[in-house]
Length: 125
Image (cartoon, rainbow, N blue to C red; front, side, top):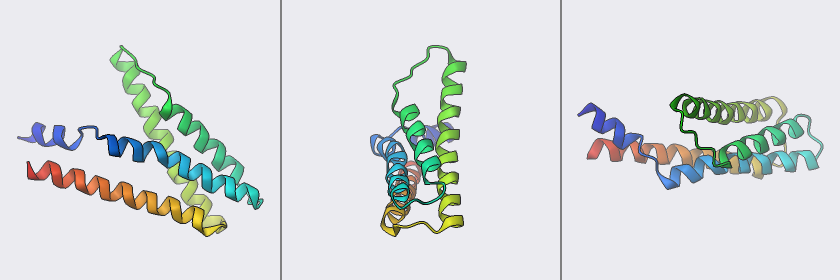
């Protein structure tokens, strides 16, 4: 029972894949608009977003399970470091334009809703 629940919960969804892949794009747009207004830290945020996007978008497949696990770990660390860098940027600098960072917040809310849907789907079946 428990393994069936976890397999249903962790089944890769194309919608979740695209939501997680597009998060660096949304942060890069917010960083680019901040660079245009000459905000401190916007260039670093944009570079980190583009590096994360390149790493997530590259089709790296490894036959070795250890290399595959390291790749997943690097992807997870990059994604969460981008989330942390964006939140620190917004918290410490109050950057403008607000609409770009509002877009990031709405994207994160959408990811949260998709996670809740996945949890409910795994609990129901």
